[in-house]
Length: 482
Image (cartoon, rainbow, N blue to C red; front, side, top):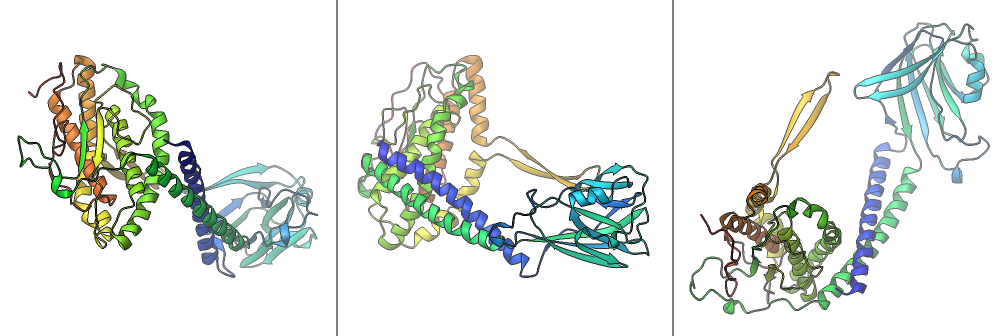
């Protein structure tokens, strides 16, 4: 592979992912700003707080900086709204003051600090501060930057400022035993500018990333060999069996079983393929982006851009070689090459380049027409999933998710265990595994818009694809079908 296009693909992928993240964050901020509304608040549910002491206090509120430092750009960073309803007929007091003034006011006073709140299930963690001094009436103090006092529900609104602040809740007459129902709300004036900034930067980053990905794909595609472009009428068939099913399908997957497989190497192949998996991550991002570009090209021109086609076939070929080496087949111990091109590796994939593709079919075949095959592919490559809902000791509902092996994974595991103890790979099992992989890749080729021919509902087993010219020689020392 050429280093220049590959570097562009790597950088483009990183920028694309960063751009997607920024756009997602900006979208969330924009939605939150819309839900918040001009005068709205994000509000908690009403909850009861209580203490036998004279006051309830909160941990430090607001950014802990000098109170003399103004808010950045004089922005309305956040506003807090508190609504308190006291159980005492004498009324409730709620106020906010600097943490130092609150400490002086409640010095020697028996009170309780709220250290933490758990929402599901609701639970408050308190810390009692003992004392013997009776405090003066809170409303008579001049320390409060915001306060409300009286019978019934009292509401306090405070614009968060730099400094170290504390919330105090008491009975209005400063009697002990405080019980209050409280609801808190918050709104921020930063959501709108933050959403706009994130969206603008995210969209620009995403566009630059996508452009680099496409340039990288085109560079890698032009640098590779031209895809097969045989006329439809000359698709080869096996001469001995001219009516062999599957010989006419334009995507051909092959895999030749290594006769000298190691008994135990498969136990560590998951480590050995890590470099390939890292590269494939970036290649698959390019595959996804270029497939979208190819879809628009097909819609308007009826042709799949040749460089993108070459690249995408190369990605599928690379993926199949790694899977054949590792846990899609375990068919060889020969390490896969780092190449998009066809090599002499025992696993290969070829797709004929289409002379013309349907303009309208591109709109439906990748999601609607392929649905029947996707159900089968889900059985072949997807695990069995189940969800169980239960209630815990706190009467809260929790969901437990269980998963199992896919059909292909289970068969490969059985083959691996047999290989471990007998040193032999059962030929019949290998043929079935290759057939399942062949089905999967045919569906991927169709869903990736490379061909208009619908994949057959047929399990073409064996190392040789029916569309290949000649069968490989039988590997000596390998089990024959039993």
